[in-house]
Image (cartoon, rainbow, N blue to C red; front, top):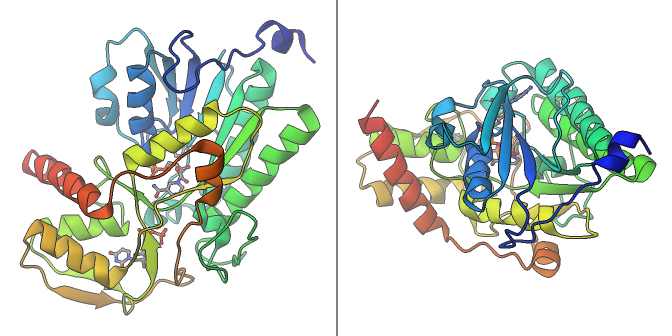
Length: 333
Ligand code: NAD
Ligand code: UDP
């Protein structure tokens, strides 16, 4: 074990609500949608937070409430380059999440997931930090098991348009457990299912943001294919709560599913968004993208048992809040 690691033996401190120790925490991808909500919560409970982000899909506005806070710093950097920062915990979220964004430059997406994760694991090893990987339900691909449990190995096309992301995350998981086993690194893996909420980008191509943006502009909602494919939607505050619980949990590296099992077909989701916005928008069908998973729903038994975690915000309520946020931001564009 290196001297540096010995000296800076981590004080992971902080079970939820325990503010006796202000942890030094790195959030990669902290300017993005989920990352910025996580940063809000960490600062709110008294931690020191460094955000590392290259602003590919993240925005400074997401964090502007914290500018001037002495416990908050932003480092503009790319996870594919190594960095040295003295931290006790690393939430590793850096990676575009929307298919439109991660397919924009697939090679870069692979690099972000593989080299970026290697770099952050290397940092965790060097400074003795606890490391949490934001993995994804996409590791299950187009699942043949429903709902998906953590012991399902998945059904992923290694050479399809989504593979830069799916396979990238699968390698990221592999690296994470390899570092745990080879270097005794303290790691956690969470598999995040579709998450939505305030601050999603209007043009990010994800279904919730597309539908709300379209409904509020009274243009047709674009359903890809027949709209019978399903997803299960988790509100962002619930997801962040799960991430915090997982980081605080002792002796459990996962992987663990975090998602809301409320399952909707895209047809049902479109109807719900039209209803909640009171929009006059019609439905328009577009071709189904290649390798689009047919259905997806998490089995969250493990998260319930190990983390005592259950989503609190029903989809209707979460959509209401998200619609309100979109209304405000679209009004102020
Ligand atoms: P997002 O695109 O809003 O945020 C990603 C952030 O990472 C952005 O701030 C972006 O600028 C930054 N980033 C991207 N590449 C980077 C790089 N090479 N170096 C430094 N920063 C980089 O996405 P999100 O929805 O907030 O997702 C966050 C994490 O959660 C991602 O790892 C994603 O794979 C995972 N996830 C999200 C969902 C979801 O539904 N939102 C589902 C499953 C997994
Ligand atoms: N989708 C859709 N219309 C849109 C955007 C997406 O019907 O305008 C569909 C997409 O084909 C997929 C589902 O909604 O079946 C969820 O897509 P998203 O990109 O949000 O997430 P992911 O496919 O990564 O789960």
